Picture 1: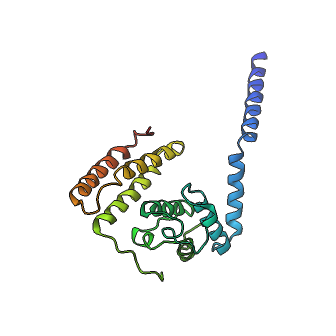
Picture 2: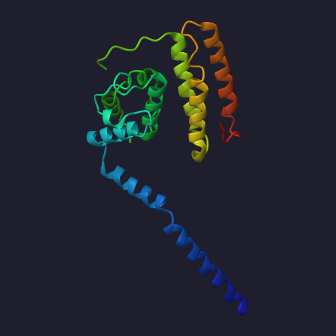
Length: 126
Length: 83
């Protein structure tokens, strides 16, 4: 009889642990919010949203001067990025929008504007 | 796209392709260690930046070395690098 009671106390402790874990992981919460945003965007991505995300990627690069970032800025001439850096920027864009950009197209992306243009043509971007 | 395509030699393209492949391979590594791989890739490429553009033999040699290194580091058993 008494033995039968014991598991309940363990169970209770386990559930308490679980609750703590849920509270202390904000990552899970933000992920859920991300999904919500994606669904509300519907079929296509809003252009302003794409622009902001591309510019945010550029801002994340140490080499880029934040003051020079703009849609029209050429990666090489205006932002001072070389060909290797440009490859990295395009790879970061790939990752952000979960797409794979073929090498041929990747070579053609030389400014944020061109990146936005390319992403708007890809309907598998999200 | 409106701007003219950049003219690149075959070798230059090969290098950029290898660079891209390296970063693709880094995506398969544990997320926490990816920045280490990124820094490692950058260092491996940049340390030869003084090689002359016309020094084809050296560039081809380095490309071969890079490809072999990529193969080695692509192994799933390699989960982290230190510089």
